[in-house]
Length: 307
Image (cartoon, rainbow, N blue to C red; front, side, top):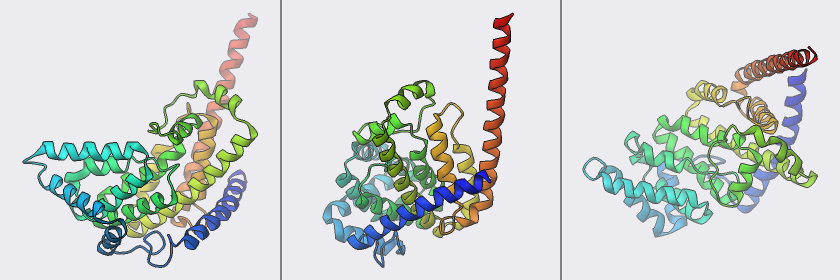
């Protein structure tokens, strides 16, 4: 009954926000018919549209990336310079530069095979939590064209989508200011300080932010799995491995659980419903046992003090 109530709760909120967000995209013409996020294009047509929309810059960047990848064995320094250039763009959190980068890579996606794995990892380390709608659109299109050409990058795409749900509140603030947003550290020692500093307004803003993340993540996942449906099981395994450690804050535990439950909702990833619910029940039982163990240890400590 707890799981059913939780599913109903997150489902109602996510469906409402998802409808609003997708409606805005349709109004602005970013997710209209023919868009890769609504109706994915082929790799070639997506590349052509990216080049046409972004001018010669992305096309030149794509050509430079292709040359660097092809020359990797003979001229590793050229490849490393390109890797450094791409890493700087990603870490800049500059939406305009990131959009240009993604558009450029879309023109040379065929060359991003296993030999270009370092470049792809650098690009997919992007923190999208505070990205503009235009950047999210480009990122979704890039993921789609990437896995269309190279399904080996499915896990990396999924990890990029999941990562924001492992961020502690302080890390999302840092990200918003343009700092590093890497994977969450297990630093729950400051959890009390975070809780004390969260006002009602901040909590409401964080909730709105979280629901937006869910809407974007579900949309990206659906389209990636349209290309590589066989990797649904692999994603379920990744979800299990990514589940927050017990040292993460209660807020992260709650967010990741709600995000995971939302995957099982109609219209999202219904094929994963059994896997997700099984995972959630398993995690709830684990947490319940750990809480019971902690209570027993505290009781033993109290008894020792009395003696």
